Amino acid sequence: MTEPLFRSEPYAKTASARVVGHTDEGGIILDRSLFYPRGGGQPGDSGRLAWDGRTLDIATAVKMDLDDIAIIPATPDPLPPIGADVEQRLDWDRRYAHMRMHTALHLLSVVLPFPVTGGSIGADKGRLDFNMPDPIDDKNTIQAKLSQLIAGYFDVTESWITDAGLAAQPHLVKTMSVAPPMGSGRVRLIRIGSESRTVDLQPCGGTHVVNTREIGAIKIVKIENKGRMNRRVSVAFAD
Image (cartoon, rainbow, N blue to C red):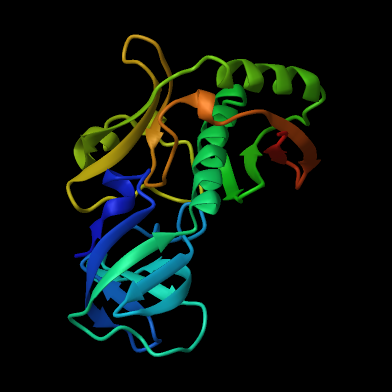
C-alpha cells in the first residue's frame, strides 16, 4: 500500500520516497506518494522525480489495485530503479489551484443543495452538474451566496466515519454518479465550518485548502441545461 502523503501533508511541495515497483505500462510505484492520483473529478498531480543526479518529468498519478499509486512519467525515459531513493517535486501552483477549486465546488454544492451528477476540477476553472427539476434563472444570487461563503473564513478539516456509520447517514453523500470508497472499514469526511456551525460535510478523498479564505474570488461563468433534469454550473477564478 502506498502511503498517501498528499492526504497527511497536503501543503508539502517536496518529499522523499523509495521506488518499490514498476508497472507493465511504465509507471512507478513509490512507498509513499506526494502525487494525488486522479479521481473524484480531480486530476492527478504533475511534477518531477529526482534521483542520483537525474530527473524525470511526471504527467499524472493513478490509483492501482491494493491501494497502490502509480506515478506516470511524461516521457518514455529510463525509470528510477526499484530500491532507489527519490525526491518528489510537485507542480505546486497547479496542485494548489486544484485545492482551491475543489474546496470552492464543495461550497457550490451548499449554495445549490441538489444531487450532484458529475463534476470536473481544473487549475483555472471547474464545474458541477446537478439533478435539478427547474432551470436556474438567477445567476447573480448564486454568485452572491457563493462569494459570501468563501468570505466566511471557514476552516476545512477532515474526520473519518465507519462504513456502517456512512450507510446509516446516506444524506452525507451528495454525488449520484460516484460512490464513496467503502470496503476498508472507514471513509474520509471533509467538513467546512465547525461542529457547532457546519457549512458542509461530505465524503471526499481529494485535496483541499485549510480555510475558505484561501480560495479567493470565484465567478460563475456559465449555467447550462444539459438535459431535462441536468443543470451544469461552471465557475472560474476571478483573480
